[in-house]
Length: 310
Image (cartoon, rainbow, N blue to C red; front, side, top):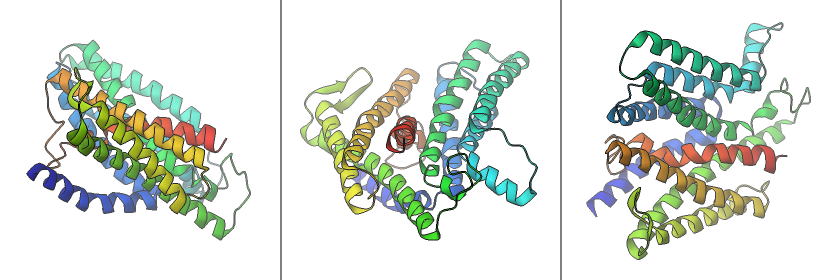
């Protein structure tokens, strides 16, 4: 009960702050995700170190931050154009992505050439996994929020030079903010329902080799909870989202999100570490709290970008 009480208190303090930043979007949400990325990569580096890898943290953090910036491409291009004037050539978003991916591999490999610190193969593999697993996935979190902001930047390829009215832009911003908040709420409800449902009704192990305490009953409670949360969000704030899409977003969160939790548990078990850190009392580390968001964000970004807004 003491551990449960601590979890609730920490959540009650942190959740309003995170929700406010998610709704605000833009550079506010970007700054928060950068903070999550830095702390998650520090914890990931400890996991990798327990397996004999000496990852290069500066390369991981810088590569991850550049991937975050890729998902702010339209916003940055628009702001730079207005600050610095015309005549500036910016790479397209897909070009920036390829450049960053190639530079990460080249720079990471070159650093290992001169480091001479244990196994170069293990170090490089661990560094690249951290960049793409944590950095690129968290970048997709920004991408989901920015889908609703692109209309603010008429230099982008989607809207050309067409300008929307102030009321339309305000509506898009509200939809984007509530969409991100709803995704976070669905993840949190899934996590809580799986935790309490598993404790109350859990009988059959879900994946005992990786996470002995997780049960199928708890996972089912989590899935149902994530779907119901997204359906409630559609009814309350997401009028643009059809009911079927809202349910499928809930399914993605309830399945892929829980899969992300299991994968992080796999990494911790392999490293013989219980929690990624003790930063958050009752919750473990930042990696522990955002493992579902990290894994489900690319799936949600692709779903919104290529299905909902196709």
